[in-house]
Amino acid sequence: MYSEFLATALEAARLAAPIIKSAFTNRSLQGSLDLKSNTSDLVTATDKAVEELVIRHIKAKHPEHKFIGEETYDNTSTVLTNDYTWVIDPVDGTTNFVHGFPYVCVSIALVKDKSSIVGVVLNPILGETFYAAQGSGAYMIGMDGEAVKLPLHGVKPWAGFSGSLLATEYGYERDHRLDSKVTSLVKVLKAPTRGLRSLGSAALEACYVARGTFDVYWEAGVHMWDVAAAAIIVREAGGDIGNFVVVSGENGESEFVDLKQRKFIFVRAIEGGPAKVREVLELVRSQLLEVDYGTD
Image (cartoon, rainbow, N blue to C red; front, side):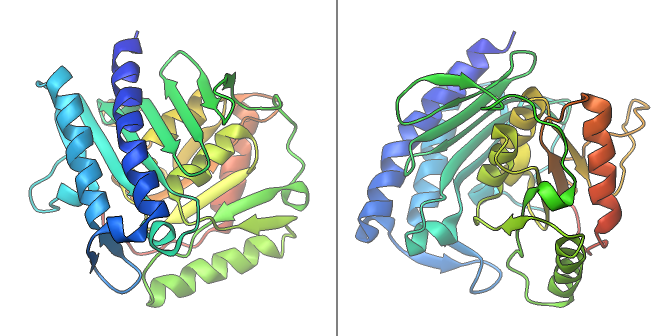
């Protein structure tokens, strides 16, 4: 149903890939490095150039659609509506990009009625592409160029926190919100948990949930462009996503994933189906402290 939109997203991501990879390899091509809110919140000329390229390519094919991009977002005037809207993170993992850590990607989502229907996440450094369209499953293309259905090794049972590899991030704030995140992190680690990773890219960490590498990923402080593409990829791989606090839908749904909320939990596909996935999501939710963030 959404194959045309998925093809457009894949084309745009593949156009962006060599620009990101060249600048990653040759730092002189990254251009100026600017700070946003603090010294941990970075933007480069490459971020801006990739966003312009992606929007230009998609707009030529779908001029009637709307766009929300990280580098052009204005929280005083940009609003996510029910219209077809492309949500773009040109370089997710900018700090990784600047420091030469290879967890870097372009993330492109198409959102309708405030829910993701198409998602593409492409890491040109490691040669990994994750993609999905609503109702068509989720796939990964690796270095060999072959598309493989997700999760990679089939659906596994839930082994509890003690048998799980989890992921989270600390974000770029260095205030009381970091204290809340660390408190939640320690609580989960002492569950006990087998292990925890931080890769510095929300889109990739969520895609590794879809892949089945991470059992759970959660983060407070991300934006819609960090997670919109990965949201549909995880769901089409049999997993699920939720906000830290349950949000009711505009049309009466008991729970609606609000992409503007900035606090998300991702859970991989689990033997037992959606009910078991939801049970694990609620378990994780019960371990996390509320963190004070506004909405996008």
